[in-house]
Structures are given as structure tokens and as C-alpha cells.
Length: 151
Image (cartoon, rainbow, N blue to C red; front, side, top):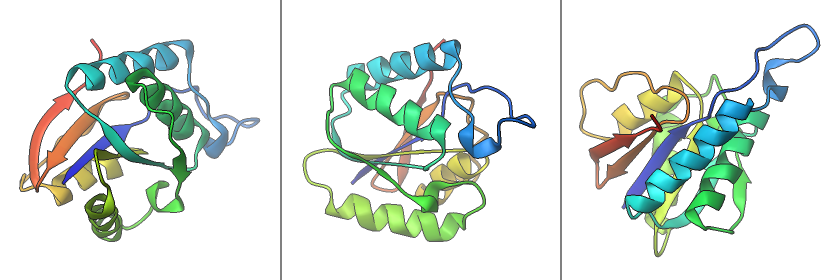
């Protein structure tokens, strides 16, 4: 069972006219998301299913990363991956979903601090440091195998 957890790429700042849930990717964020997708493809990641936080920056990251990998399947938006949800409940849900995936990894897009906490909870690691933007980690059969991010 493979689960790839990904933090969204760089996004514009929240402001009085732009609430957090509507923040979108910067030009650098879009480039980093594409680069991360290329790195994941080089690492041999085949996607079997994709799920994302419903926030704009996470959905945009998901679209760019999966597109760069060459996967054209649906990306499920789930409030479970939005900020402020229970890490243990989300980890259990992701593990259940990943067990159903055939022919590839479950790739999940979200936010800090929950993405690093999910990687920690899904793996045997004692501590997983915070992910930078556009960073991914592969958890395979309960073991954190690697982390990747564009330079």
C-alpha cells in the first residue's frame, strides 16, 4: 500500500479581500507543482487515486502535480484534508482508501501542520518535520520511504 502526501505549493497571502480558502498559487507555486510532478514521475509513482483538500491552492497543486505525472483521473475534493481536521481520523481514512486502490498510489494533497502529522501517523517515524511548500513524501506499507521537493 502506497500513500503519497503532498503539501500544496506556494500561494498568495490571505488578505481582507481574499479569505484563506480562496488563496491561489503564485507563478513560483505553479512551476514548483509541475516540477514536483516530474520528480514523482521520475521516482516511479503511478497514481491509482487522488484526493485533495477543497481549498483552491491544494486543488491547483493537485491538478498540476497529477498532470505532470501524466494521470488524467478525477481528483476527489474532501473536507477531511482541509485545515483543522483530526489527524488520526484522516490517517485512518487515508489508510482505508489506499487499501482499496488498485494499480498505484493514493496521492493526498493538503496543508501544514496536518500533512507532516499525517506522514508521521501513517508511518513508523517518531517525528516528521514540517513540509515545505510543494513537498511530497511516500509512505509505503507503514514506512516513510522518502521525501521529495523541487530545488
